[in-house]
Amino acid sequence: MGLLSKKDSKLILDPLADNNPITIQVLGICSALAITAELKASIVMSISVLFVLGVGNVVISLLRNIIPSKIRIIVQLIVVAALVIIVDQVLKAFAYELSKTLSVFVGLIITNCIIMGRFEAFALGNGPWRSFLDGIGNAAGYGVILIIVGFFRELLGSGTLLGFKVLGDPIEKTGLYSLGYENNGFMLLSPMALIVVGIIIWVQRSRNKALIEDH
Amino acid sequence: MGLKSNLHKLKMKYKGTKMAPAFNAIHTFLYLPNETTHGGTHIKAADDLKRTMNTVIMAMVPCLLFGMFNAGYQHYIALGEIQAVTGGFLSAEFWTLDNFLVGFWKILPLVIVSYGVGLAIEFLFAVIKKHEVEEGYLVTGMLVPLIVPVDIPLWMLAVAVAFGVVIGKEVFGGTGMNILNPALTIRAFLFFAYPTWMSGDKVWVHGAVERDQAIAAGESLDAISGETILGSLAQGKEAGYEVMDMFFGFIPGSVGETSTLLILLGALFLIFSKIGSWRIMMSSAIGAIAMGLIFNGVVDSGWITESSKFYGLMSTTWWHHLIIGGFAFGTVFMATDPVTASQTNKGKWIYGFLVGFISILIRVFNPAYPEGVMLAILLMNVFAPTIDHYVVQGNVKKRMKRLKVKTA
Figure: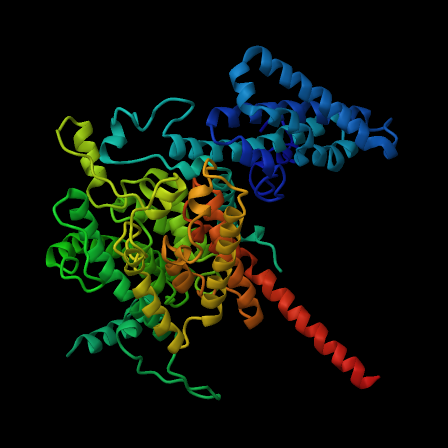
């Protein structure tokens, strides 16, 4: 990448794979389980977190030298809360149905450990540009997993993708359904999201043995 | 030149290669290995894992055969072609070739799919992980066809078996390392993934679903159905079966779980061969009876009236709970799984009691899941190590006390 130095591009690429916030650091699991039954919700959630974390990291980074360290958590919370409310209001204004599906989980972005984690671990000690890249990278890493999980859960659980009936119509019995195929209701339940995340972790660690922790 | 020497040659040929465990497994499954261990001291015992597994399978064979007869019997009785049996367990009307053949052709594919898919995955993992094929699936493969409805589509069973073996067992490290009973994991997967094929009044009778589809397609036929006793009771209806019918197993239900009599036979066999833990079987029966008595007491004291949706199951006579649904089968063949149950003797009592207690609790209070045994055993599987931990710690504490008294 000509635009970014090698060190900077690492900030974006690392969280996508070998330092993924969900599969390696195991953060942000709640929302990954709760809203991934539909691909669309996963995508919107990813974009919301991308916005909150990207902007939030920059704001915290700009403020990093004037925040007294004793009240830094409160400052971080205010920043992330403000951003989350913006996202929430935008969703309610332009995608009301979807905001109802996501319900409380948009608000709960505030408690997403990834966000506070990046503020604490990165934005407080780095400049705005690098913090921005780090925020984008981590949010993208989170989003990638959400979208993979959402893809499989919606495809196998409802037989649709983004609402399109890609496998045929279960009631009219067209496509795969004419062969006797049926949707897997388990996929729509939260435990299956955990299992799908687990499988991703399994695949990732067997491809890259360096990620396996020794005990 | 028999099969044995050919197998031996194949084994030698592939020794040290990737496929070695596969050939080795077939060889040792069919024949006793020729090799003996050299060096060191070993305890010589006949009950290796293979024999243990085979004993359990033998204990289940009567249930399987009965299941085949019962599948045909329920099919014909729903069609109205035969009368309900009246002459006790050995009634000639039940043990007919017609009945058997219907069940045989429905259940044999279930057995084949269960073993085929499960063993394929076991072999695959053995080859990838470079260890010997483990015997763990032998029992699971036989349990699975016995705990599903007779008309379950084969592809669903295959998906569930793949899920259960990989997620229930292999990810934890294979046979002996699993936390949950693989057979129940498979059933739970089916139950939550395809609920329309695992509950309701159609799936328990061969041909009922097909018949419904034919009617939907415009053919003029009468719908047939057969609700399980638990299903009827959960809906507040009369079950309509004699107690002896329930005990002998002439009732709709999963393939091999209906006949309490034959399950008891299997239990005796397991207890006398010292494979199954009598502590677990006994204590879970006690747990179920305790819960059943509590519910009966609640009904008797008038806290629950007939208008309550729990009335049907709550007022079921306490000991009926032991012979309806999958309670007996689950207790005898699944709760006693030595890997997932508690290991300590005191722990077994606690574990078994809670299995029985929670089974009946779920049965009564969750009409959507009339079969509580599956969920109760899975739940207790998770807690078994915790129970063991506290039993062991308790023992350590007790002995430490003794030690202190002595030294003081």
